[in-house]
Image (cartoon, rainbow, N blue to C red; front, side):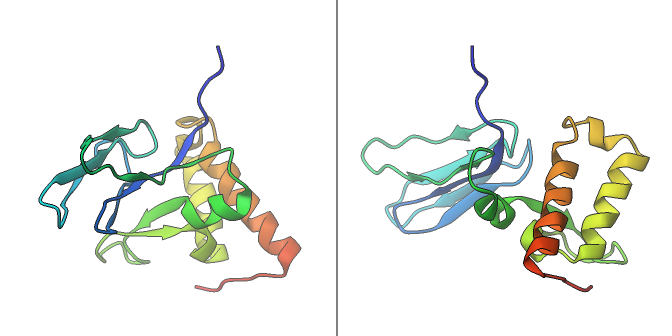
Length: 142
């Protein structure tokens, strides 16, 4: 039995064009569409949970790990609260993270054993992004 590819970004587009996404396991996000129906996503990169409206379907926009890396780097996000840790939480695609932030994430995950939580998957993407930038001559400062 073949395992489904890993979820990179869990998201849908509702009929009114609103994109809603779930960024982590228990991130239940809902939106009341202009058609009056409520749409929801949940599960982050762990599972897909959706509302279903046969009369007004949504567009599935989930990105999986079998997508080209150019797509993954735009859609794999890391949450952050700024350098001081006191800013509001924002989700940033790895393609926009600074080189130092990517390396800090790798180091943080290794130091705390978090790299084993997802089989090292996050770190493998951070490392791949740094290698991609090296090959493309890209450097992003803080």
